[in-house]
Image (cartoon, rainbow, N blue to C red; front, side, top):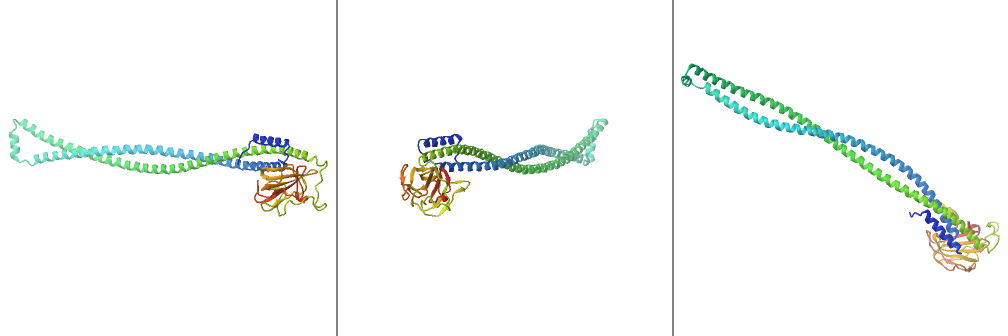
Length: 398
């Protein structure tokens, strides 16, 4: 939709009024009134659109706020889960390190235990399997009885010490095995906890991302509605400004047409009734009336449409003087004839014109060839009758 500003409407009004003032009343009131009706209809339509968009924008804003709250709540839940996951993962890492340390230490203890046990076994075997001559030799090798006792005591103490070392290593190894088993059990428990929290966090991320997508979509829709509402408001303001300018233009053009016709007669005729006085104007072409005088599509249709093929000769409804012949906005190629006594007729959508402004035409002449120019949906002649510039129903004069 092309937006017109109030300044543009004012300039258009001023331009047309200037043309009229220069002696061109053919920029006739029919076109202005049609544009005025269209501008009013557009203003009413944009007012309805503004109300609809305002309601939709209010709903979208409410939905967007709810979506933002949902995203914030979901993000808080996800942050809590991720903090728990970090803490559990730290515990798991620590337990895994402990298991590795304890395993390495247990390996060393098992090796030391095997060595100590081997030493003890060899020493005991050497003592208990020794025969008497060896004991006698050991005894005779002593220099004194005291020396003998000391040597025997030393052998006993060495044996007992080896036994204590082996027993201590065995106890330490067993304790470490139990500790490592407990640590491994704890590690497995923490690993399961980490897996469970990670699964929950992944599910929460999917939910969070879905809510974020919904929030962003609502924000985009809200922005689009705001831009549409702004455009509708601008359009409405432009249509209102245009309608105000066209109303003034219409009044001025009516005055110009009345002034142009004032030389024909002092008193305008009353609108005749076809039932009482008969027809006063001839049909410009012969064909069916496809659209009558009155409101149509939300605006005023200020004439009748007579369906004929392109190129059909168009005749003046009565003798008179051409006060405009040329192109005019939605009318396309149009001829306007003044018949005197304030009565004028207009013939629109022609393919070509046969007369010019100022020409005097008779009732049987040809003023144009019918067509489909301007705002037209098919070949026809748009025929208007005006009294002092004010449109009246042509069927009352035909």
